[in-house]
Image 1 (cartoon, rainbow, N blue to C red):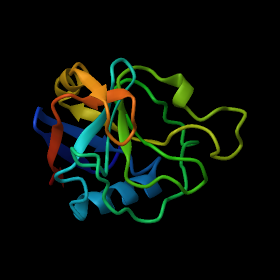
Image 2 (cartoon, rainbow, N blue to C red):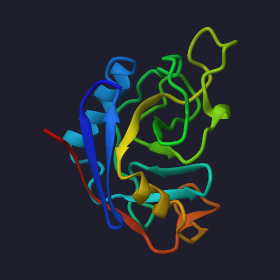
Image 3 (cartoon, one colour):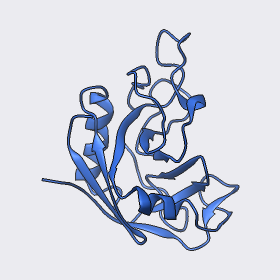
Image 4 (cartoon, one colour):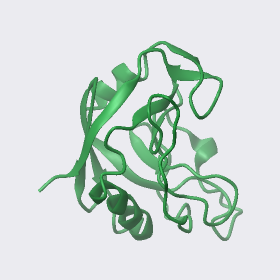
Length: 171
């Protein structure tokens, strides 16, 4: 992957993302906009699904969301796969529903990849980065006890909130 590196500092430790601005230019530009606006600072990791994903973005420890920009078009057909340690943008339904929510794949999640039969970007989640350093921290986060609650509902919200203290582009 070629592009900027971003450090995510959390209450459980730090990890670094290597962004891929060549294969996911729109997504990287969108992500960096949120980083530069300090959108992620003070939010929390709100979805922990052991063996699947760790998700974060716009919600604080009470489940209150932050304002987001208009969505961007998916780049899910960029050839990148949702493999362990890669980072992808979450989305709702619709072609421009990707905003600020993102997740780290804790396993190879082929079911989240762009489908070969899709000639556009109607399927899959856009992979735009990978963990460059600190996967051990992410692995620890993926093991925390969870409870019902948070913005996603279900048994996936960490019992003890994991705060994102700062997200910054590295020099």
